[in-house]
Each structure stands twice: as C-alpha cells, then as structure tokens.
Length: 333
Image (tube, rainbow, N blue to C red):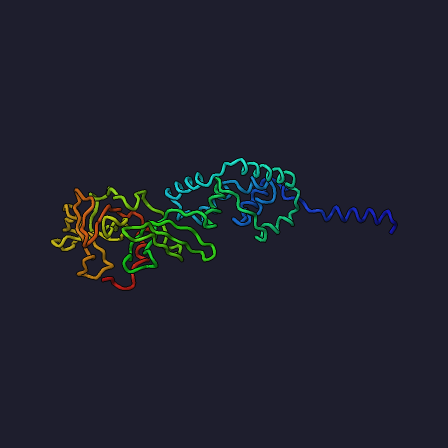
C-alpha cells in the first residue's frame, strides 16, 4: 500500500471511531432516554454540561420519581415545611453569588462536547457530583429527602418500636430518611417533663402522611358525630393528660348495653350516647370502652383515664386495612 493510501486509510479509521455526542440525538429520543434514567442517573447527567443540567433538572422528569418513592409520605404539612426549609437555607450573600457565577462560566466553556461513552461512566453512579444548595425544584426536594438533610412532619404507627403502651395508635413526629438502612429516624415532640424522644430504624410501613392538618396539641373538631353508628371504624384523639400531645387511636363504634346488637332493631345511632370500643384490650379492661356525648362532645376524660378528643370516621378501606395489619398478636391488658 502506497504512503498516500495508508494516510487516507488512517483518516477514514479516525472518522469512523469518532463518537456521537448525546446532544446530537433527536429531541424526542433524548427526552425518552432521560425519562428512563434513575434518580442517580439523572443527577449525574445533570453535572455533565449546562444544557443537560437544565434538561435533567426538569420537574416533569423528577415528579415521577418523587411520586413513586415519596408520594405516600408527602402531604400538605411536608410541603409547607419544605417551603420554610428553603427560606431558612437560602444564601444570598455576595460571595455565594460570585462563586455561583464563576462556576456557571466554567460550565459554559466545557459544556456539551463529551462523547456518549464518557457520559455512560457518569450515569452508572461512579461519578458523585457535589450537592448544590437546595432550590425550589422537584429534583432538589427529592435529593434533600434522599440525603436525610430534610426533616419533615409525619405520623408513626405504634411509636417507640411498638411499645405496648402505644399499640394501635399513631403519633406525630418529625422524620428524616437514612439511605444506608432504608429506614427513618424519628423525633417525637416533648411532653410534660419528658424530653424529645428519638427513635431509629423506623420502617416505611409504620409511617403515613398526616391525614388532617390538626396539630398534635390541638383538639380536632369532629364533623362526623351525627353519622356514627355501630360497626363504624374510627380514629380518636387521646392523651394521657393536658400536657401531652394527642395521638390517634384506632377503635370501632359499639352498641349500647341496652341494645342486643340486632341489625333490624338497633337504635344506637339515634342515641345521644356513643360507645367507643377498643377491642385490642381484654374485656373488663378500663381501656376497652368509653362513652361520649354525640351532641356536645369536645374533650372528655380525667387524669386517671386520659382525655378523649376529636374523632375521624374512617372511610377508606386502605386505612381500615392498615390498622388490621397492625393488630397485636396478644390481647392487651
């Protein structure tokens, strides 16, 4: 082969070996690829160049991941807390702005010339970009939850590792995620002389988003009293004394002692007295039954038996099923 032919052959080989940039892909193809990336893949791709950064931070790409992993636990209370968290961490100092602008200039200079094979090494998780300051994007919120930096309001079933004194109850707490154990750390508000209680290793299935916005120390105004009848499933606020926060306790509406429980002759729903039954307790236990007044119920009880507050009537089969899953193996005293 002549020198000229060898030179042409080398040039052809170089041209054939050149790799296409990911940004050379058709718009729809690139969007489809980004839509199939994991949260880690999206985060790493966002660190490649300014153009991919904007694409990979798009809320519509992250809303799917947010809903899949966090949707069940994130309610209105957590959203309000996130807004407050953003306000408290916002840094508008001149030094931070200058540093940010300088970084953007470098990104612009280096942007969008990387081949696909180089990008693949970034997507597979070997590359760990630095976490930016949180902003009002779904990506930032997801990463703050995932990293455990963000404590958010939740409610925990059977608090303090299922302590017998809290069986079939659900209490307010602030929680944060621990990605190393795939569990949560919880801190319960102080009550009385008791300091904040910390619980670690809380499993996913013991958490729920607060179903209503009533704070733990406030009485929930019941709007279902006139509708309650035997067999209805309820949650009722209960606290040991006035210094304690309320927890939500599972129970059912029972029959009056004067009623034989017959479906066709029962008039319990017409009485001003409503029977609350907590069947996780043994018959004869002072915690087994309680009576409230249907017409003027606010908070009833004593320092001996505790105080019964507002009532939620459970309409969802999922909520009722959850309480049944938590039913203790042994009857409580």
